[in-house]
Length: 224
Image (cartoon, rainbow, N blue to C red; front, side, top):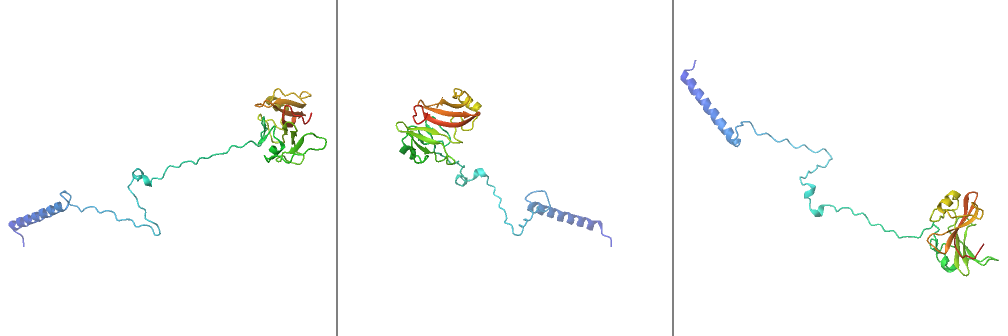
């Protein structure tokens, strides 16, 4: 059965009223916004993997940490070394703790030499340098009047200028230009020990090489 125009108008007015009420209600729930759609949902939390420990993210920056929680700056340790006398340099006044002029007892107390002994026919006592290799080692000489008068170096001991047993003649004359052997470039020669007024180096050369090196008092009276 067809509807009359008046019933159609009444239905339209009713639908309009319903729509108005719905829009008003949605507007009120959305906090005054004009959007009628539902509020977005937050993403669900992602479960932690089995056996793992959830991480906790802090929004506190390192600069905001309390001072007592900030690790102190690393301070390098202070290293102190005790100066020791050289055990490889034959200096102008001695070798290590040995000093020219020492008595036999004083020299033996350094624990660098053996027991001084006087051989038959000799006037000066001699002793081994304990660190010298082998049994036929260079020796130290004790004058009855001057004390420790000479120290003969073994291989590896050098003068402050770097001259040692085995140095070449060229190296020797470069370090000590005033050295002159008894036969020119061969034999025994003497050069002053720098820094000392009463000692000298006795240096022997053979076949272009230093074969003997000693520090001695200028006035030594134990040999030649």
